[in-house]
Image (cartoon, rainbow, N blue to C red):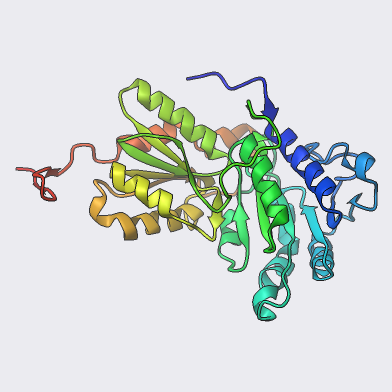
Length: 343
C-alpha cells in the first residue's frame, strides 16, 4: 500500500481557501455558525476569515441550529448567499424541519420565483474518535428530500472546487464534509476547478469489478483497489460526488464494462444511500451483471464508543472480502452471442 501524502494541501486547508476566495469574489457571501468566528471552527476550516473579512461577514451564531438555517433562508430570500456551518452531523437534526419544509421546497412553492442559494456545511462521519452525535453519516436523510443538492468531496481538490461551485449555485446545497479526511493531503495548486460537482468521476480505472463510493470512503476504496492489484485483480473506483440529484451515467457505464459492483459507504447498510445505488445498478445493468451487487457499510447499530469504532467503519479488508464474494466462477461461458450456461 502506498503511503498517504504528507505534503501538499489538506482538505481542511482547501475548504478554508474556498471560503476565503468566495468571500473575496462576492460581497453577498456570508459565513456563520457555531464557533466559526474568531475561533476559526472546531476543525479550523474558517480560521482567519473573521480577521480578514470582519464580523459583519464571518461571525458566530447562537447554539441554535434551527435558527441558523431559518435565518439563512431569510437572508437568501433577500439576495444574500449564506454559507452556514452545522458543527457536527447530528447537531443538524434540530434544524431538520427548516431544511425539509422550507429550504428544500421554496423554489417549487413559489413556482420558481424565489430561489434559496444557501450552503449548509455539515462535517459528517466517524473515524476521529468522536462519540455519538459527532460521528453520524446522515446523507440518506438529505438525499431523500427532493429540492436539495447533496454533495460530498473525496479529495482536497474537489473540496475546493465543489465548495466554490456550491456557493455559486442558486439551489440549496447540503455540503457534507468527511471530517476524518480534513487532514488528508494532495499535491494540488489552488485555486483549481475539477469536474462539475454533478458528475461522478473514475478515480482509478479497472477491468474486473467496480467500487462505487463517495466522501470518506474514496480513500478506503483506492487502498482496497491497490491491494487487489497486487493480488492480480483490477478494480475500478467511481466517486459519486453529488449524491442527489444523481447522474448515474458514469456509474452504469463502469459496471457494464466490469460486470461486477460493490457499493461502499460509511453509513449503516440498512436503508442507506447504497441501497439506491444498488437498485439503480440492478435496473440499468441487469443484463451485464455477473454477480449480485453487494454493499459494504457500517454496522446496523447506533454509533459505537470511540474504542470500538474501528469495528464499525468499513476498511479495505472488508471491501476486499466483498469483492471475493462476487461469484468469480461464473455460471455462464462466453459464446460470443451473449453467453451460455456453463456445462
